[in-house]
Image (cartoon, rainbow, N blue to C red; front, side, top):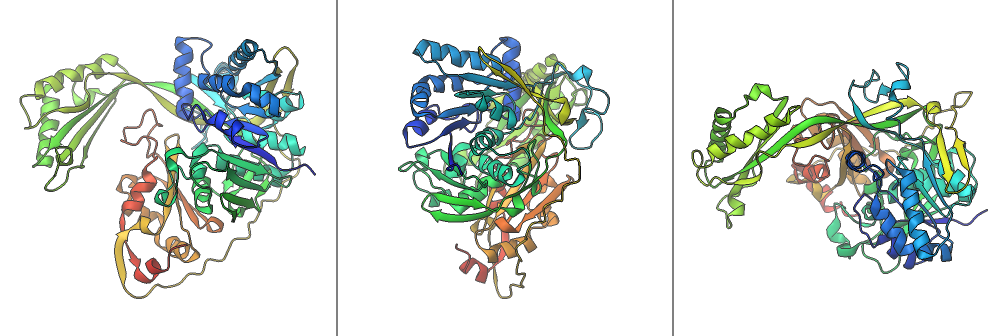
Length: 588
């Protein structure tokens, strides 16, 4: 049986710490260096970059990192697997080869593609490509990117071909970890439990320092976050893993930090992927030592027969305007700005495709600073016609000396910016084979996992018993975050909100307290939206999907936090009545 594979992450998004690759390669022993560069918004950014400069639709920071560590990786036998190829994995691989040539090195470099469907959309029959949310046809738009989420087997094929560096396009975030593990341990394509365990490990480390204390609700308990270390997953032959980090680096790996990351951008307990359906309701976490969390028990079942497709189209133009409201009479000032703006605007309000106005109350009573006295009036207009969006600058100018006292702008005004709309689709997996190309060598086609001929039994998790009880006695009205942590994020226009407890008692209370109706009360922005609630008693956690909160995706959202990154911290700040007895015994 092979030894556990040590997989180190060096990037959680395009723009993450440039020195992280060197830190992971030089900080201690590892076997594989991975990095996640892609997100739904990133694909839109890369599409725009590619349109302006053909051949540039990949993450160039990855190439810079390879220049820093390629020699060390080859000397130490460290494999590199990254999805930095974005929309052009071939050109990314060629750029890495140019660096190798300049350094006098001779690595075997491979790339995996087949995910890019934008040039194939016309060939799909009606019903091949369907909407992820409602199952009907995807909206009839001109898509500038359309990428299927590929799985790990193209990566396995590249490593079998001897690749030292593997560059992919739009794989799942976990595939770049699952692929090396499946290759190292020689798993079969239907080894559901080990594959599921590797997917879970990949999900934990794919966002980099979020697994080591970054963005953690209880961050005040974590030392060294000014320079958190990146995570490592030690993946065993049975798919179990230990999450850790290099000694002496900042941050911490605890059951809490790992739980928090497990809840990031997920949906139901059945975590669907192209290689396996991983059952997050079977995961068991154990603190195995300082900065070592063991993940065991993960069960898997067959994947769906369809792949998710991330699609972007241009939605038109938008202009965002923010005007300060300082001091007294804030609501009256906002009302006057509304009336004056639309009286002066050369484009009537009903001529725009959409208009969003928001009063943001950040002002304080008896403010000790000018900033503490200030709220803001925010306006976003969207329209296919760029001229309409630019025209509102006239209204802003006319208001400056004629409306509210203390008038000044905080942002925007007359600057029209293009924005994108994200659409999630589904396509039969057998229509999207992966192509594996070794630079200067062979090209191989890897077919998607075929659905089992016979139905595969659905995993029935051994659900822990939650001891319900009635908390009698006095309560105290305090922020919910005194008891629980949270992690939130975006999936297209849907926001995910994970809330976790740190003791069994707190989870039992949370499970009773935080219903969908109660969530609507605490988060009024969710009123009228469809909300799904999922319980993870094995992780003492709940997960909510709030559909439509982010409108048509991150780039189109008019929320101040268009990615819902702070949604979890908002709900933690809401005051609720908590039993005093529970507060007194709630610390883990």
